[in-house]
Image 1: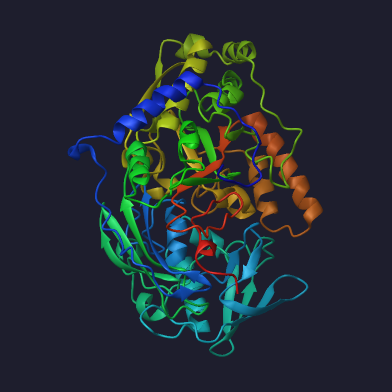
Image 2: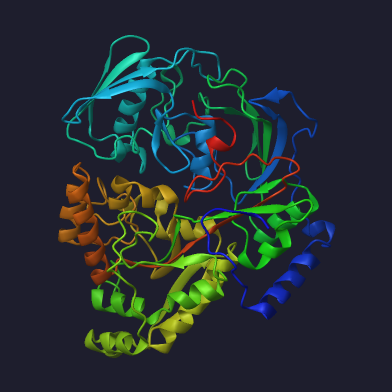
Length: 551
């Protein structure tokens, strides 16, 4: 058996024949012709290294599904694995531990006043950038001011409440907030990467800047766009040299090719989650094993709330009621997942409202469509459901959703597109103010969106320029806006829970999108190469804590 973290025991894969078919396809792929082989990884040396942090230093080769750009804060692409890789190269003031509790990282001491407005910090002594330049408190001040002045969908809103950063000396600084930020230690302090002033101070176009000098445990030694990366351990890292000497990363878009490469030893770890039907083939074998745990990522049926007829909440509610979420989890995920909550929040989180439940009722869905006048106005139209062509699970989910919707009178056809094309239609240039060009799409968000209340609000707020930076469906609801704004400044935990509960009720009623399921994380790896992974609850094992110990 593989390593299990808080998952359902004794799961049985119910679709036996589907498993046999997929296994046959997988095994056939391992004998594919040279033209079909996964690309070469430019692997790191396989020689053993010195003892580091009590572990034998190794060289690790991993596969990632897409190019993540030069991997600096303005050029990385995805929340996972892009942001995870970014934080191997850059550091944050705090770091989320295994249970997502913020812990001091760059700082070794901090204090906060009773109002939660004045925060004092002390940096660790001896932190340096990859080029050898010492990090000082001026870099902290510069970073937060730079993100405020140069717009970024993730960083700018996170630092908006920072009124000033006051420098006391090279190691000591204060952050003064304009208003209390309840999740301040989580976001921005555990999320926003610190950048070097001496490199970025004259950069006026950060989206095209390719430098990636950070202070993190790894630095980029080689980057070939659309092919490979090579990360080298930062030998002068302030917390000690990381346990892995080199990380070679190869870009493999196709899932089958990814796990074929793992099977034959071309890679040692796949950053993408293993297809559920292949779990038994990688679990507990001599050369491969799995690590599994609950995931806080989300898989959604994203709805374009700006486009008729989806601007009608009755139509959106009908769509939700027409979809059998349990069947999706059983059939697509083979039980390795949790059915979605119409209030978006994962049932494993403390602010989940158990009174908000998904209702599957095709007859009621058809009645709602009739009430909305859908059949008379739109019954003869065909709508497109977009999905990523390189994700078989999402393609299968899209097909099942299409069947569900067709059964209640919404004619939907599935269109599988490459990632770049689909992303540009749903979230052009990762900017919600630039519009959208789709009807329906299978979409998803990484774990931090679920965990951080501030970023969670970005999914729903109608002010796309300032607050709704993740609102790719252009959903608008004034009651939700008010609650999101209150949540962002409410420190009282009892009131926070009240707001979360109210939000989930409103979202379930107005249906900005349909939360389909939360996939379990299933990671396959080769334990003979490296077996010191740290599972970060809801976020997986590709994280800084797998390579560096907490201070």
